[in-house]
Length: 270
Image 1 (cartoon, one colour):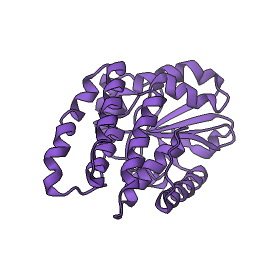
Image 2 (cartoon, rainbow, N blue to C red):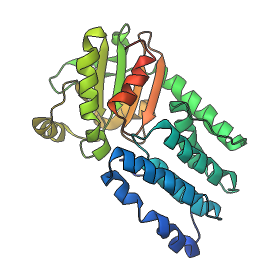
Image 3 (cartoon, one colour):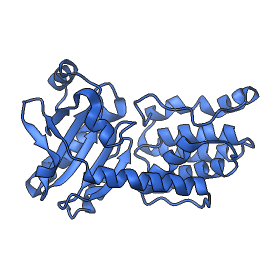
Image 4 (tube, rainbow, N blue to C red):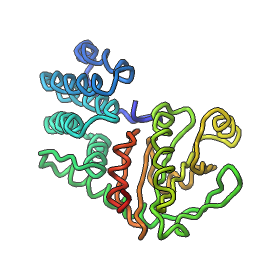
C-alpha cells in the first residue's frame, strides 16, 4: 500500500454494505504482486467497477483504497482513480474532511485535475497550499548516520530531495534503487537527496543499512519534530526544492525513477 503509517477511516459504510465492498476489495492486496502494466490495467478496471456502486460510503472506501494502491502507474490511470474518488465524494453529504485532504494532496502533487465544484475540496486545497508555504519556510538540522550535520537552508544553490521514509515500509524500500540511480546521475550537477526517518531508532537504521545499499545520506529525526514540521503523516513522502529553496514538487507514495526524474526536471535537472 501507498501509506505505511496508521490511516484514518475516511468513510464509514453501513454494515449491510460490507459484502458489496468485499466483492471488489478482495482484489486489492494482490495489486502489489502484479507487474507494472498488469497492475495499471487492474486498477483501471477496478475504478470502472467502483462506478457501478450506488452508495457514497461504498464508493468512498474503495476509491480511497484504490488511490493507496495506485503507486507507479501512468498518469492516465491515476487520472481515472482521481475521477472515481471525486465522483464518490460528489455524492457524499457527511463530514469527510480527511478524504478531501487526500484528494487535494493528489491534485497539488500532480497534473491531475477533477471536475468537483465543492467548497469542501476548495477548503482542502487552501489547507494544502498553507502547508506547502510552511514547508517551504521550514528548516532543520539533523545528523546522518556518520554523524555529519545537515541543515536545509545551508543547501541553497542545490536541488534538494527530501525523502521521508521508514525501514519497515515496503514502498519506501521499493523506491531506494530509483533514488540511488538518480543520486548517481545528478549528484555532480548539484542534487542532494536526504532520507529522513522519524520513527526508526539508530539501531534499526544501522541494521537496515548493513543489508541495503543506500548511497545518499540517511538522517535520524528523533522525536519526529522535523517530520511533523513538514506535515508528514504518511510515508513514503518526497519533496523537491529548487536551487532557490522553492518547493517545486511533492508526492505521497513510492515513485519510479522516471517519475522522479520528471519532477527533478522542473528544477532544471535533466
